[in-house]
Image (cartoon, rainbow, N blue to C red; front, side, top):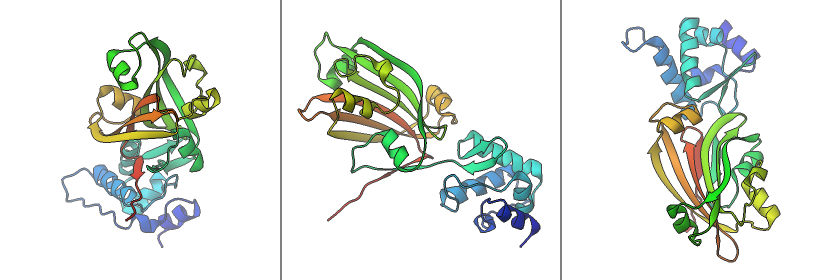
Length: 258
């Protein structure tokens, strides 16, 4: 084992074997740092690293791959900008968390994260009650004079932006939206309006300027757009939520039985 590999192991970083498939070719016209970035991204995508696992330091990574520290730093910088790697000041570089969300159970974002050991939080953009727009009247099945609560926020896991979410609900269910602090479903449960079933629709989209900025991703990056319509036990629609999920962090899982 090389000295760099031994040090990486001692420091609790990724096992050198996870980096063994990365090949850097000086004869390739692609800049070295992009070769390293591409190799690391592929290794992460293939599951050679676990979420929250520490990567080797810049110095150790350079030694393991036979490149300069500048090259290693630029590769890690690129992965950090893309949200694949989380840089923690004074601690190192870590694989960003990934959320596997089953589709057979009605749960909230907050519940899913807590069950997996992440710390959920929200960066609120808007919480208001206002007259319903025509498309909201149609989606919620409410009368033309109705008012709605609109909630917009970025959802985070361990301070990493995971999704942008917009929820619209009849104001009768959320009269004071500023009281929604964390889980919307917990709030609805406390008010006696807990959803019991939901329909979800999925489609692939590309991040526009606003979503790219809010989620700290490049413009045009892949997103999963999820539309959820939730119902009360009496059949009334309680929410319509549009969620734009980062494709590099989310996996949706469905169990099928014959």
